[in-house]
Amino acid sequence: MKPIIVDQVEELLNNFKDKPIYLHLETTNGAYAAHRNEGMMTVSAFIRNGKIQFSHGKITGSHPYRVGLKLEDGWVYAQGLTDWEVTSDGQILLAGHDSEGRIAISLQLSEKPFN
Image (cartoon, rainbow, N blue to C red):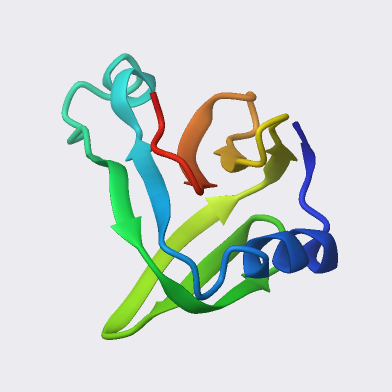
């Protein structure tokens, strides 16, 4: 993965607009938190192969970034993104890594369902 370059990633995101696509969105502080503070609540969110269609994709912030996808009746947001890549089959993968390189958030878009 490489660091997010806002203009490049926003252009790639908007290649998916107005198309039915599949979303993978996952956040976690999972195992990273438990060993540091036993009283810390572990939180996470996960959706895989959620079918969405958005009319506008936008990146805001300054490292880490937030991506917003405007849906017909709302928004999908992912906050804390730092890196990106495009796979050989055209999926866009965005991730947020902490200062120690551990993944904390993942946002992936694809025209085909994820395995």
